[in-house]
Image 1 (cartoon, rainbow, N blue to C red):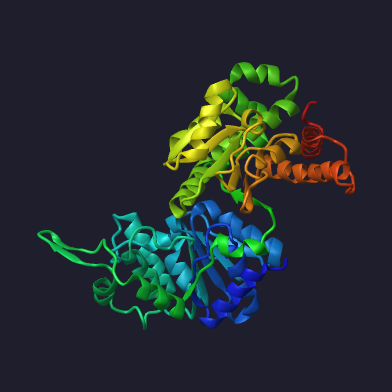
Image 2 (cartoon, rainbow, N blue to C red; image 1 turned 135 degrees about the horizontal axis):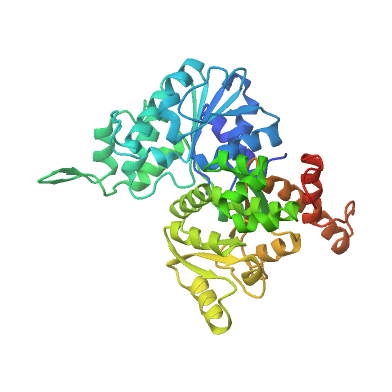
Length: 464
């Protein structure tokens, strides 16, 4: 793909800093693509290791393959496998398992370390501490980066609250400039002494620190600065892992046996229409098993910006579970919310600065309301009609919208959702053929195609 002009400028600036850079573009501006583009320009910087939250591991894998034809390996589990990284230019590991893989990764001798969501390394102490997971992961990141010629630290918000949070990353990137923790604290953190020790939760000389970052390592872009380069609406598919892949495999391999354990009464009737029943159950199972990753993505988004977020789902139980996991003030609009109550919730989301999230049922909240207070839409379940999804997107993409609307589709990797997503994209071309004169190469609906794929996969063993 061709980079947007601002993305190419950022890649050039990473070059200017000789591959040791804090890439601090705001969320959604394509830090993953920029980092991978820089790697492709510098084969001497391979192999590389990406350290990231578990919820985006497969995003890195997908974008490396789809946009750059770069094969990668996603590391999983707590037991390193010697064959896992053989001939792999890109290794991807999440923070939670990094310590277990650290000796193996250092033995692999990577040239570049990419630290995604580097605010995860903001802990004040970095001495090894096996009892504190946050301190442990910061220590592991520093050990992994030691002696590596190239380090890219990525975050839309590397500074969450106070300047002290930046020191660990700055020390990794520019140890010659940010080598003394004590001097950094005295210069930029407004230290105060208390009977219990020194506190450095303040901030001083912030303009001086900003100028120093710009001169030494930071590449910064804001959405408001680059709107001229962006289309009105951007879509992305975000592949996410399942919390229990083995359960999904059991259900997929022998659906009726799995259903007899889950719901014996339903299993009896399902045997007469196994294919259609299986589609519905497998979609709901995938939605349930990806909730950890979805909630993690949402909470990272909320911590990383002050923007609002619109989330669309299909099933009430999915909405209820997500509501419990979101760490922000949230409103819900589903089929039970009608009339003036619906209007009040829309007004609250649009006008109350403390209300950060709206969760809506695609059918109930996908039409007839305006949600332009948000420019990011997250769709965590798919429907069989692409038109429903476009309608949901356009709650935020309306007349008067002043910024690009970002539409993210969270799809459970290795599940029926992936196939459904591919079919929905083909169906979108059908809509375009009718509305915009584009080519029309298929006229089956989504569920028909899913059923045909299931029958082919199971060799006719699955009943219509």
